[in-house]
Image (cartoon, rainbow, N blue to C red; front, side, top):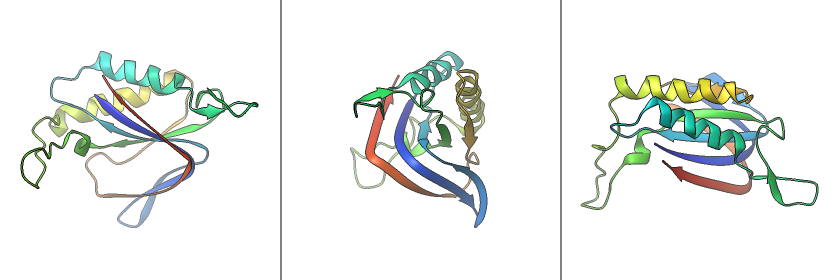
Length: 145
């Protein structure tokens, strides 16, 4: 499993021009699932996201989590995180889990994040989504488990 977390001031996700999800201050998390990933890994990613200290404290140091600052998460499924472009110019996605296996793990990660006390908004699994976000910093963290 892999995620890319970006600290944002706000973000809005649409599908077919229709609004689906919107958050204020928090994280946009692009979430990729690899063949063989498990529910336990999804839960571990949620724990990491809830506790990841990438928001500034009163002294201006990155010392607070999304949970600490009362932020939200926009969780977006992203199979292309497992694109392999080492050979040729067209990425291979053979490491990405099949949709019927990946979607339940994506949803489990979101539910586990909610259980950590973090409000979660979701993308539409497998849809052609448009995401407008205003990055804060910018701060981008990549985590793989």
